[in-house]
Image 1 (cartoon, one colour):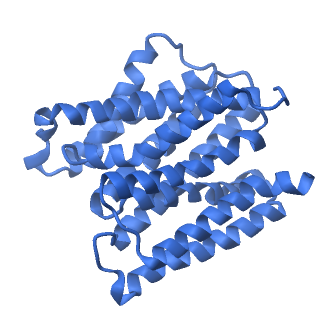
Image 2: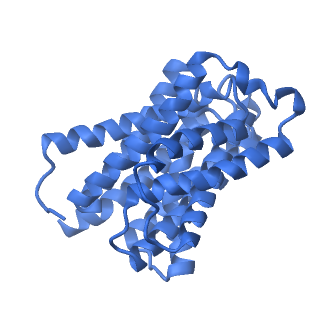
Length: 303
């Protein structure tokens, strides 16, 4: 890993990831107009897995890690996120709330891997907790109703999605500890294949019969949106991010992640006309401050 400054190509890659992942939430919201949450999951991961599975051999690691990552990151994170956006969560707020995975990862890391939290992370977790309290107050505030209102169920589901993302991070860390030379791209591709069958079964069990085959009549723009989610957000986004992490220390790359909720907020408000309530703005400010504390705190202390 190099310690030199980021080049113009590195900066372009980082900004591309921020834009790809930030717009991802609006694209998902649009795709859910023609697909149920479980249908979208099945189709997205089919698109992501099948083309590249022909070119990448299964990673040389125990199959249980591939299955666990596919369940946590595929079915857990994205399935719950899709459900949240379907039942009452705006794309703008989802882009912020999903970033709480940083703090769930720290909690799981402490419990499962005995990883200790430094002071920046501890301070960030306090700020994030205050931010979540602000989001919760929005539901008891009589003025919470409006075009930017979300549901309690949507709020809880997006938090569960963040927790599932954190669980997949723990799996990835364990794989890195045991098999340092594994291929991250092959790992993502084959874990994507794991998620397909569970999504198909969930759709068959829980989607109403009236909409079970509605995906066959989806507008062509919805299929373009699925292609974006599968190839741009999953394959291109994660490949660029992994490439950056191989070239530079994580503390130089991770701060770019702060741009994802900014882009998500802006695109949600501009493209979908979503509005943010006062308590939600307070929660957003605290969560973003918490992320900045975690991502930049250690770097500032070393200086």
